[in-house]
Image (cartoon, rainbow, N blue to C red; front, top):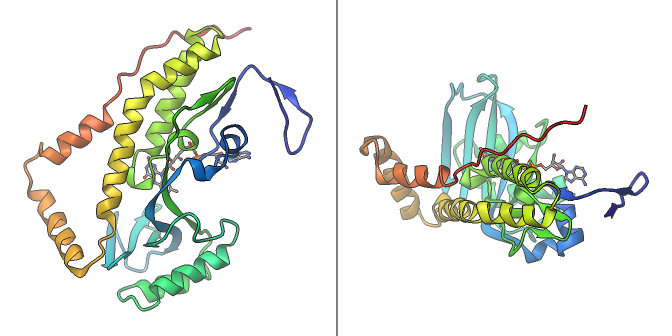
Amino acid sequence: MVASFTSGPPEPFDVVIGADGLHSGVRSLVFGPESRYLRDLGFLLAFFTVPNRLGLDRWMNGYAEPGRNAMIRSIRDNREAMALLSIPGSSTDFDHRDPAGQKALLRKHMQHMRWEVPWLLDQLDSTPDFHLDSCSQVHMPCWSAGRVALLGDAAYCSSPLSGQGTTLALVGAYVLAGELAAADGDHATAFTAYEEKMRDYVAANQKMGADNAKHFSANSRFGIWAQHQLIRLLPHLPRKSLVERKMSRVFNGIELPDYPVPAVPA
Ligand SMILES: Cc1cc2nc3c(=O)[nH]c(=O)nc-3n(C[C@H](O)[C@H](O)[C@H](O)COP(=O)(O)OP(=O)(O)OC[C@H]3O[C@@H](n4cnc5c(N)ncnc54)[C@H](O)[C@@H]3O)c2cc1C
């Protein structure tokens, strides 16, 4: 197949793998608009670097009001901190190319919050980095079409709340590369085997991400109180608690095949 680019001449390829993230351009070109596949989990997440003024030492502090959360955790050997803010919303509530508008949205939703939130909102003007997006997953009935296959967030984003997005992307890359090598150039066989091996593992991790999202942002003061009691309880649960066993089943839910290493031409 021949792929054409925004810049540079068209080039022939045996296969094209779209590993271009949640807002994959390859997915839009080959499988249709993003809105068909994006499943919003109900809130927007913003991340940005701030000074570690709380003196956190490999620690995270948080504060919640109904529907809204603020967290600060130390990063880079405690030299700096990362702020995480969440507000209710979906992927259509903001413009991806307008960080000023995104910051205004955060201010609108969070301006009356207490704790460190007013200081965090002030930092929005001076932070060296800023990322805001909807907390979303990608669900697709099929991850390939012809000679094009998708991988990682582009195909099966599980959302930052699963904590498993990087693992899924790396495991997916390993399985896809292994199946392509094992099928000896038969891309259709390789894409089918990749999907068969990954489907259940992806589904379990996406379910975990969606379940975590249900409990991430409580909508009432009682809900926030209950959340805090649960967090206090966690260290006192027996070591191999039900929660730990369930997570371990999801994390280890795929048997990685030992693929033959293809010979590299000299
Ligand atoms: C704030 C945040 C925190 C997270 N925390 C965690 C965590 O703690 N643990 C975890 O496992 N996961 C976490 N995740 C999720 C994790 O980052 C992703 O699941 C993972 O990076 C997916 O990898 P990927 O390679 O599929 O996509 P990406 O990492 O998004 O990589 C896609 C790449 O494609 C590039 N690209 C896109 N379009 C083009 C183009 N047209 N031309 C050239 N290049 C292009 C992008 O620049 C990018 O480099 C977090 C995500 C976010 C947003």
